[in-house]
Image (cartoon, rainbow, N blue to C red):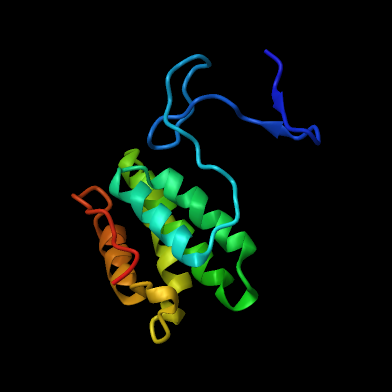
Length: 149
């Protein structure tokens, strides 16, 4: 089967995906993909939280990763860390405790330096606490995190 390509000829994966971002066979019903677009920090946080609340952390990661790549330098590590927390939760939900522990710890380490300033109303301290708990027990019951206070 030929690979899907964008207008510039770069490979794309147009296969449908499930709620945790796993590819499904072509022609299968999947969940709606995250639309690439410019978002304000408020819009990105609200959309990511909506995905998290619907148990779609992979999709939250895509929103947060897009924000990370567009963020000004002083906030890049914050958004990258938030995206890593969503990836860690994705690994946990997929049954990969090692991946959950590793990526969630990396994300917590990245955002921890923002605790004092907590930009955009992000509950940095709460997210660090949540992430450290997930990393300690990635096989346990992990609630969806709250991005904002």
